[in-house]
Image (tube, rainbow, N blue to C red; front, top):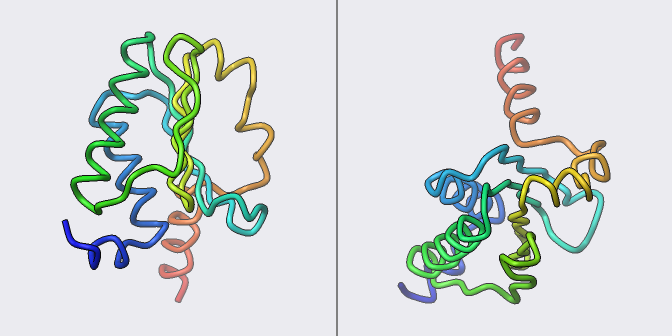
Length: 133
């Protein structure tokens, strides 16, 4: 991939791509939150659940590899490991949390960010607005 590909991807496109790649590896309960108005840390958070430690690693490895292949982007950092039940991939504008079910229930990040609209909420609002207009 060229440097031009890297410059042309938006945060929304990268987030959607990462969500699709997590889904490709059978991640469960995938939630994508637009947090741009709430934090300067990132524009999008993606939360997903894996059903085992090897599954956590497979999801993370797939996302990192496919983003590198498609957009020539490497994570700024990757924190955690499968044995800790939570790995965070930080692409700058997009942060992905791959967690075990127990870890996700314990930390309950959805509740922490519950006032942030999910991408599905935003898309549904846009569809309703277009139907009215």
